[in-house]
Length: 272
Image (spheres, one colour):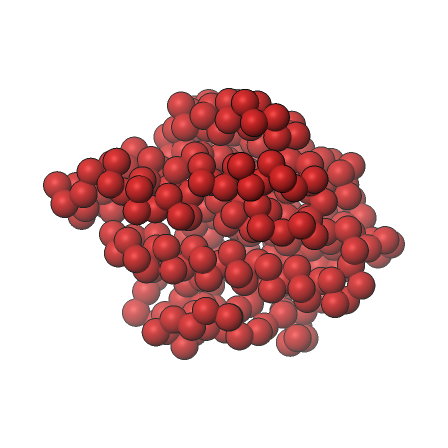
């Protein structure tokens, strides 16, 4: 672990278990925020696609105030992991369908490695939360991790392909692939990295789940978020729901950021 990082406990760095062609991306960075009297409780926090370096650090500090340690993971191709030729994390989600699958798989395994590290430091009550793309990564991680007690998914959608095809923030990707693949083909290709493929597996876990969605969201459109809520109910997966009266990016604006942050912190403290 490096000292002097953004987190109060420094920056955790380790080599990703999945190599990519980009050396910067192969070194994982995670900001550590230890809480006093955490009593073995810690949460892996995963920000949204193209999040800047400060993203979710405030949430980590809020979790500290609720008695929870936090480890903010930089997903693949984000922050210090971004290759020098990029100004955005475009290699995580792009028209390169295979690289998008590989980047998501890498982020999931990096999140599981963060759980290994927290467990090695004596944390026994583990949780995970993610926002937008981070929500997808968190759900895939939760579906494969029996060590987790709780998971919070901040903005939800069933299929990565649906988001890329219909979301305003992904119009440049659709413009590249439209006419080459159909939405049905895209969802089939990206099914391996979509929450829809893992709900049955998630059902076998004993963790509590929080679903946060926004009816005015133009990136994770409301009809796709409602599909997630309906399928959690259909499969009887234990969950709670928070509905934010805003859109996708306005979640970061006052007062919605406080509504969101407090909902997440209260749920994570109660279920850990």
